[in-house]
Image 1: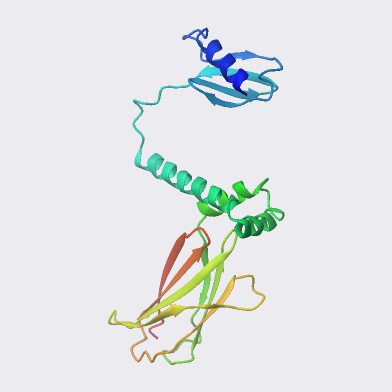
Image 2: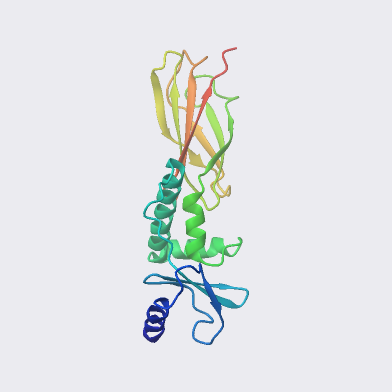
Length: 212
């Protein structure tokens, strides 16, 4: 690798500044890709394509681009942490077998970049009484980590909040929250569902309780 790096650094001095890239085939660079100094080397159709690294110092990035860069950076950092954690690495490795991802790193990155979802909330049984059950269906491309519930009355006052419990054998997709407090003014009140995944992504859904 050291010899190859030296070769690339010498070669780049001879690249015509008006050429965007130089294509060639040889045994040294056949399977090499990446960046060395100001040289970017990629493989296209069996050919090694070398070019000077583009100067992006004057490019003004949009808010969306900056947000995507931050999101990607967070995912990359999380994926590296997963690889260094034996248990998490094992968990993602098991999940990887059932998906299209080629390794643990990419499986973890996809999980970090994909938020969980609240799929369904069943409030039919809830009538503002202790023991009433709120049923939640949630999804994540790896695993739903937690589901919590916040209940407000129709005056916006907090009645109760707490974690829901995953149903046995549901694969963390079906959750139940059992109310513990009386909510006399539950009609036209609200229930907020919060779902988190392993990387810490959070989604919230607020539902107005039936006022009829």
